[in-house]
Image 1 (tube, rainbow, N blue to C red):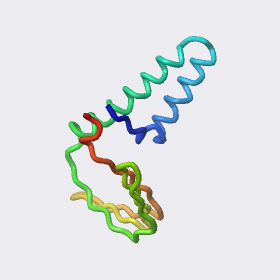
Image 2: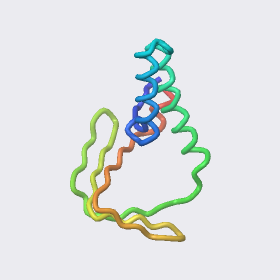
Image 3: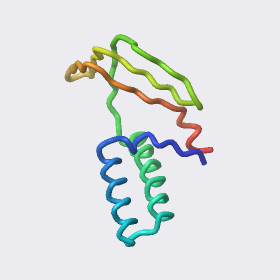
Image 4: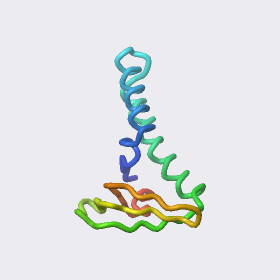
Amino acid sequence: MATFELYRRSTIGMCLTETLDEMVQNGTLSPELAIQVLVQFDKSMTEALESQVKSKVTIKGHLHTYRFCDNVWTFILQDATFKNEDSQETVGRIKIVACDSKLLTQ
């Protein structure tokens, strides 16, 4: 199964990584188990987003950069506006990373 490390750079992913690193350094956890925890974290985040998120958002902005490498799209937008049925929010710069979810189940 292919594993994408999409969520490890989120706040919760970085905190989990720091905690696991500390546990490995203290000898509380083996490095192999720490890696398994991170892989499961990515799988769990993917499953949660697929099954629990029901709202839709429209994103508009100026495309600054885009890339396609190893079946992963990366978009960098400037002055992006996020709009759903209730509200609208504008941010100066955002990075969007997208991959084919079918690759996660292979």
